[in-house]
Amino acid sequence: MDIKFWGVRGSIPSPGPDTSQFGGNTPCVEIRNENEPLIILDAGTGIRKLGLDIMQDKSVSEIHIFFSHTHWDHIQGLPFFLPLFSPKYTIKLYGPVHYSKNLEQILSQQMEYTYFPVRVQELAANLSFHDIAETDFCIGKEVKISTKYVNHPVVCLAYKIMVNGKSFIYATDHEPYRNLFADGNENDREEGRLVAQEQTDALIDFLDGVDTLCVDGQYTPKEYKSRVGWGHSSVDHSYQLGKESGAKEVILFHHDPDRTDADLQIILSDLQNRSWSPLSGTIPVRLAREQLVITL
Ligand SMILES: [Zn+2]
Ligand SMILES: [Zn+2]
Image 1: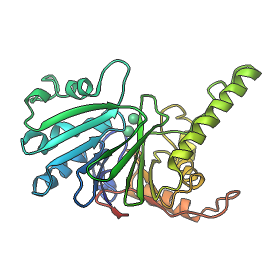
Image 2: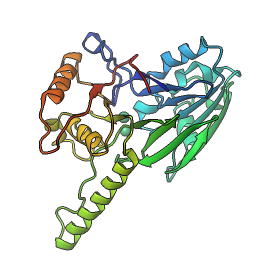
Image 3: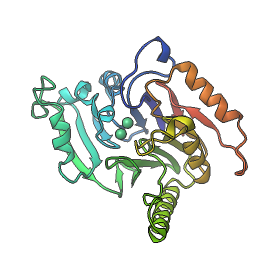
Image 4: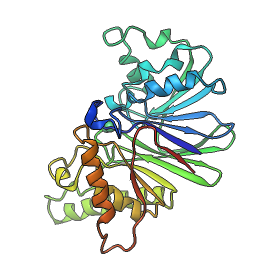
């Protein structure tokens, strides 16, 4: 399995000389397996260049795009994904079930004439839309996909992709579960504590033993204190999550748009140099950057 990063930035694109090393495009990850359909995770602005790359590759005809959720930074590159405009491609789009609108309605709205000159109905590719919840299924010959809800202000899915005994998990836009009744009476506090613990345990079960965990690490621990409830983790939270779930490697993702290349290097060195008492041992940690390729 070859995993390539085309967009690693959270919230809004952040181009410029200060971010050129890690890149300023919003989330998009490509996954290729030999003789299997091409997989794309999220359609942030990074998907534009991936689309150009795909157009040069005659072997690709079937593409599966999985959306973690439909916040702008994860869908705004889609109208600029050139394979949508060619009848050569079959493109299946998957995203989490919403209460009020389905995936097709949400993605079509951003391509209404108010926002974009070409509507979804006018696209030439063979498109299909699939609303999914927590589930397990297969695509192609032997690619297994599992999904799990994570903690974000809108429904948001983490994806586990498994091929040939190797696994990659994409868990962006998540913050640690917390006791929502911490200010309540004693019974409510206990109930809130148990629910948060159950949700954390279920997530750790889902992540258990993964080869590579790509996970939200938007904030520093200090920043997180004033951004509780915004749906993102600190780099420390995400590193700890990787350790507790037995991940073999952690890739921090969804970098804050204000973070320069120099800031990111400092964050990485700090994480690598710190002792992680009381938990023993460390696991490899890297920062996602555009054009990084991981082979599992
Ligand atoms: Zn995001
Ligand atoms: Zn989001």
